[in-house]
Structures are given as structure tokens and as C-alpha cells.
Image 1 (cartoon, rainbow, N blue to C red):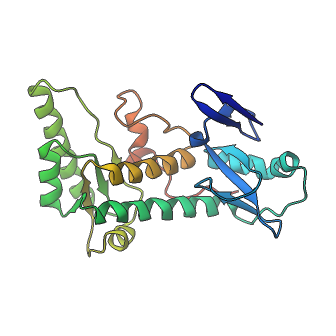
Image 2: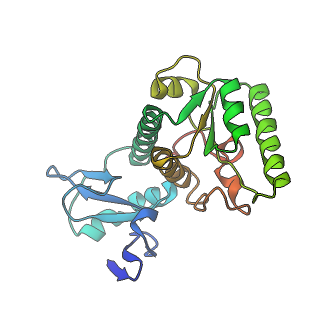
Image 3: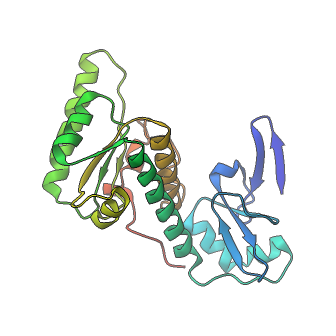
Length: 236
């Protein structure tokens, strides 16, 4: 099912039937071999079928055979589809981080990260999920000082998102540097591209609980994976 509204085309989730923007859904297509394939970038040819941006919803779609019913065809659903999507989204986010790094928007190392935070031009803080608690505490203190400085200057309070879903080894590979535990992201189109992919992965893992922008004070804590983000994909 699809609808066209004033804000553009919309699609419905095969499980909930809720009508949403494509940005709030995951598209699937069936390949020539009859295999169901996640189409995260919505570019593959063929008729699409959609689920909400949620690992739980994909699990339900598999259990209920919702893909087959929607497509009215016999298809093969790959084993471990939920984990497959998680891995694809994680890889996509790391590739986007690498692009942001190539654009010169990523600084790593405690001192450099602290300086970017203090400059007031920090789009996000990135922390290795397996980093030491002491380092996280110190970065948190630097972020708090930056918030106080903004308030003192009469600027609007702003919650800086903290990205903590990547292990140090993943960050080292994406950034091409050794021993990456902390990094800071400066504003720019490539930074927004990375943050957009990160938010989608958060929403997928938390069953769409992290749907709001990190600047929203009421929901910003949902985007801080240090306390709310599952370490990886949920079992089907």
C-alpha cells in the first residue's frame, strides 16, 4: 500500500499497517532467486515491501509470514534476517563515519576531542563501547562545561549526541588510526550523513524508541547508547 500526502509518498508497514514516510521504514525486495533482500538505500529494482524501522517488527514479519502475504508469492527469507539487517546498518554507519573523516570532520584523541567540545562546534561525541569508564567520565565533564558556557553566554541549551555503539577496533578501521577511544565530529554534510545512519541503527535496535532528534531535551537520553542501546541485534 502507498499513499501520497503533502509531505511526499508514504508506505505502510506489513505488520502494523501504519502509514509512514520511507525514512521511518525498511524496504525489502525479492531477487531473481526468490530471496528476500533488505534494500536499505531504497534503490534496488522490483516491487518493495516495507516494515517499520524496528528489529522487533522484522521478527514479527518473519513469524507471521507477512512478506509472503504482501507479495502474494513464495519467497525465501534468509536465516538470521534481523541480525543481517543490523550488520548492514552498522557497516553503512561506519562507512559514513569514514567519509566524514575524509572530509576532515573527525578529531580523535582526548585532548583534541576536549578542544572541539570546548569550541562549541561539536556535532557529536564518539566513544568506543569498550573504552574505560574514567575516560567517559572526563569527556562527560568537558561536555557539561560546554553546556554551562553556552548558558552563560545566553545561547540556547543544546544536547550533544553521544555515539557509543562502535568498538575501538571498528573506530580504528573506519578512521584509519590506532587506539581510537574518543572522537569528536564537527558540523558538515558528511557529519549529518553519518548521524542519520547512526540514528536509524539506534531506532532499529530500540524498536523505534530513538526516533526524535538528539537536540530534543525530552528524548535526547534515548540516543545515548551508553545507557539505552543494546550491544547488538536481537534474536529472531
